[in-house]
Image: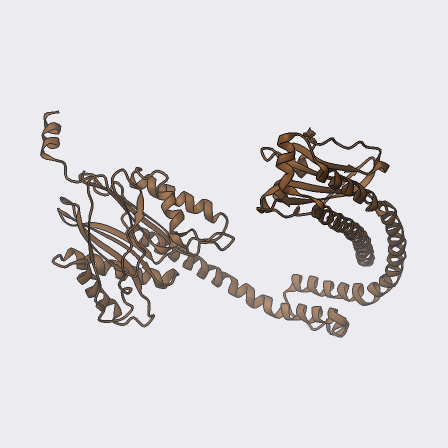
Length: 548
């Protein structure tokens, strides 16, 4: 029974080699045939383009529009037509034509010149003849020629009853550099079919001979040097699988080519596999613990950020909404908003340098310090950031820092003060207007160094105004072409529906980012916050509401 199994393995391996050789030979023949054909076709096409370049020098494109408008030609036209007729015969082409293309569909051509080789048996199109005869599959090539002023992206090839032929297409420009027509040259590829048949016949015969020779020689080598040692190794592997005991029974095949490496690897595997099995359970448990802890950390971080909306359902003066999407399980971005007192709203948008767990830990500390210091009251945003900066610089051995935009808005008046520590420029929209960036000089990032003095600036929101702040993950979102989303696209997304409520507005921006990025991975956290300011209701409006 064991001998039959070994013989069966030998037959399978030999049959496999035969199949590989056959497939390899077939693929080689196919690739060679295709490349040989492609080279011939390309040579014909290059020749057609050389003829087209020559024919283009005969033309006077500045008169094309005059000819078409007046519906008649002149002596210069006749002379050019004669030269084209001579060229189509001397170069053994089928056609040389010049046509104005209808750019509404790239399917309709108005012929200005049409030279036909008498050997084709076709009649020329008369001057001004309009035909919708463009093959649909060439419409894109014509569009490319007309829009770029160059040639088709790939050579045009087709096969008809008259045989294979190639077509060269070039743009014709007038003295102003404007594309006014297309010149086409169709050239028959006379020797292509015979050359391909001859090539295929020779390659097939040579390949069959090589396959047979390889089969005979390799079968002998395979059985002696590969199959028998592999069967020995297989038997040892089966023995180890049954008894789980290491053995030195493969020393007899250690010096047989790469099979010796396989034998030593099997012996080493027998030694290592026991240790692996013993460690596997412990490693798996550790990975599960780390994964669980990361999930908990993600949830803890999410819980630290305001996530219940509407955030202030009893306040009619404003509407606020924010989102944060980390690039990893945990992120370094954070946002915050809270009431300092009944008439002051604090807003924070920040981005910690770095990614992952270190940035998340630093984020927790920075967020807590900023909120606690702000709620103590009595300080401007600049002083708050200065105090927090000194605290974060203490023991900052990891040398992390955080960019922060901090603003305190007086709800009753719409007047606010903001400090920007190295963060992105906010965007503001005035009532019935569009979002625009508010650009001003930044201060250094928080925790960059001790003793920093932070700048601040005043702003004022009027009823109907809106504010949008974000981290650099928005502007620096990158697609597969390594292009940045940028602030221009961001503003375009904001202004698609600028009057939307903050929640819908942020969804629109996120959708635009996702569409732009596509399948590219997210490298940075994406955090956004939107605020719509309605202002304090007037006494007249309040009285009206009471009466109603």
